[in-house]
Length: 454
Image (tube, rainbow, N blue to C red; front, side):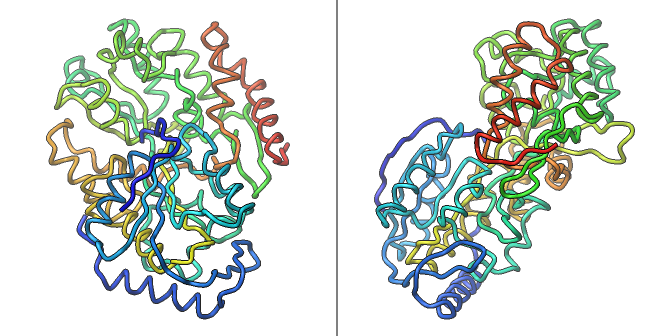
């Protein structure tokens, strides 16, 4: 194994070894695909995938620092596989490092990695057109394996009905809460957003300084507007988006946030800021947040003592039949269409996304592969950190992410941070800023070549 460091930076917060029969099946399908297609030029377009000549050689895998243990473990368990493991920033914070390098490799006709991890869920918006990522559901990965992902988990990887990547982990939103405080103060965990708002107002009066959430991060739209089924980010095609920010589904959540911000039970500080950590982290009664909040935020950053934090489903609006979740993070694995080692690449890709040795025992985030997620949850439960069983709400939320919020090439986080955050800090309301939000999304989308409607 050769470890290299390239553009290492911040990363998104985000088993038993697979049976040899599964890997053999994957390899057999790859060989069949290669035999059927021949060894001509490479194309990942809708017109068909034609693998390059399969010459083998070292397997080049690009990972961020958080996924480096996965690649190292695979090398340890599969010493017969020669690997070149390269660490890079994982496209953290939308760095576009991978896209820039692929553009260079396309010009020089060499250098592509066989498999790459990205902390972004929107890489297919450019990687397919660039001819970089291989179609995985055309013989490279068995359908029986692909059926194991949580409902909708691989939606960001599908382009025109073809699967071009695999989700590594999910970041479905749930309601985190302090169980002992809720019991001590005689409060019930809210089941609806109306109850959530009422409790937030009550907390502001009875326990001033305590919080029921934070809208101070750039992912606030994913935490609140997405679960409210606000149609601000409806990807209608590879280069088409529908943007509607003033519908009832949008204004109801914006009004709720404005009310709680006014009552000061909704923070406008980033949960990862030193100010929040020092002054507000110990004052959290409830907080909507992604699945990784439990380990990364409460246990890691805030050092919240054990047996306090628990999980409930995201509230639903009383007019809705069931809860819906948003998604804040996660990551994807892509296989290069230029790989001359597809058999080894498919075997690694299958292992790294499904193996309990990594996904259940070592992975920091909630696995997108459902069987591994079940075992990951069992490990969280056995840790003794959480108050009660957190499994049921997280498992349910994994299948409740609203599909109407897409994964465009433009960044909703960047739009929100540039357009709303400064004005919210200055005292303007979210409701009043919804038209400006719509204009900003449209401008960002058009700059990336999207047709915007209405």
